[in-house]
Length: 333
Image (cartoon, rainbow, N blue to C red; front, top):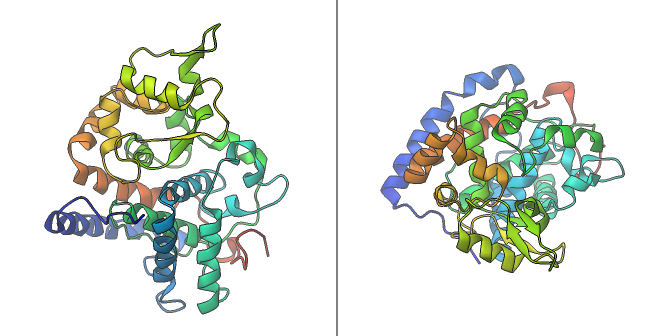
């Protein structure tokens, strides 16, 4: 199953991307100190970005859930130790081994893209860049905006499970708790609202939102939060009864599950946010107005997503001698 390139007509899409590209170029100066740059591999591996995108395109045609998985993988990498590919490392005591990361997916896609790039440009392109580019491309192939991101990240040599929990968001978090994490990473309230739009694709295990329901003596679930849409809660209970297998998943967005669009924000306004952290965005006056804007204006969401995505992928990056170029994303050299 292939993803549509976009739901917008060509002229609107072209206009949107022109705005995005212009605004992103203005951000380039902010990366000079960290030595990230647009087109970093233009001379050393000119086909690097194309090779990654072709790998993502091929994989997502047969696995429509992959974009959400790769995007989540990037988030979990960047929030812990920065965007350095440390979440990809296998082994006891690594980030990947932490129970909070047991449901992560998309690793095989990143490995495939890295292996392909290694054939043409051995020892040149980092796993951290492959992951950032793959997540960027996954969003575009799912119908989202085309975003230019700077490259030049190097791979980290440290990956500790103990670093995971203090740095990631929980689906039960309040706005203040989410903003505390985001602020510590140099991200703003606007970034939180825009990047929460990642939930317009992807899936979640029943356990990720089980705190929104309570089980009665007969083993039936009822919603704790009565503000949730009744039909939506009934459908969630049907898909995730108290006896549901831990492997069961539901779509983050019940309307357009595999399409990266602004439906997520429309869902929030209709009281169909899957997680407590989603619903919190429409209940807090600091965030509700922006949610309403994105729900009514997909182009504005895409523009904000692009700017926030660039900031996300630039958190605590390692450059020059701070890291390495891994031969295999699963192992430190």
